[in-house]
Image (spheres, helix red, strand yellow):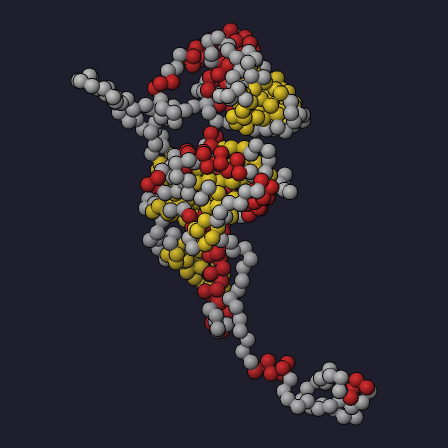
Length: 479
């Protein structure tokens, strides 16, 4: 029997072994054996969780030397323009009594028993798509609180055609002025259901009945009816008295600019971890790549990913939770349409910088554009060709969550401190700084010969004025 000394049989048609014959000897070294003497070409460790992190790139970063950033603003008198919250017991939905103070006529009212009586006076009403809940021209005898669902605020336009003025959804309210008008007027606009849902109605008659037994409520409503809106500008700030267009020597008005007495302060947040590397690995396995450097590089990538997630989702300072209620918009039909993004840009109309959306939301917007035969031109941004709308870059951000119902949000930002926009906060110059506002501190070697490093990143984000940030909510991303 013939044997091969240097390698295996070659699977060729001429090989006698295929016909039961003896194997032919190899004429050269086999590749499997040759690899034992070769040096493989390796890549650095790859990490699928690394994203483009556009939010960290587009934010201008402000140095916060003292660890706290204070946003000073002019004194604002806009109260009661937020959103109302509810709770449910089975199919029964009730308004939280204290949340009624979000209505302008009840702002600042703190009599809890009376608020409880007002909450109990609210009547629940379920609706279906297409149902008309309020007709324009009917007596304005109630306030409508939207617990769940989406409603279209419609009325007669300038040319006598029906016009959709707004879309209201969860937490919004309608016709709050019905509580404070001296004489009940008529609804200027109507409400038509776009989806199914539930509203609570608070009748003016019930409010007046409760006010008859509560001197505090009666006095509060009377004071609300006599407030002078001319003492504030369109943004709710204290008015600055000015004179213009005059001739001669009239007495000029005196004025001053009032500030908030309790401005908001942002403390830098931190993301930390302890990186552990065995000394034997660090000593013996550092060629051709430094093991400690590669471990540290991937750890920092994970910290930066968490940093961007916190800037979007943190309940204290994250953008999704810090948008002003008046800057929260809703889609007209569900998917993000060109009309919806136009409304979003109108909310941040003073030099909008970027739009941020989940990649699947961007795909949903692209489908809506395709259905309408609209093909937005891309924009050049930071050396990349990116999707855009009206010349504003539309950047992907996978940190914007997608709800179990398949909805997401789209953010519109005006960035920069000089434009009273959104700014990132960090602190450079910290001890053992490895990157700006990120430190790597040696923590010692344990008895098990494990080297430890403390890796820390400090950051936050601030919205300088409310109209620097807009959010398009409940964006449907399904087909």
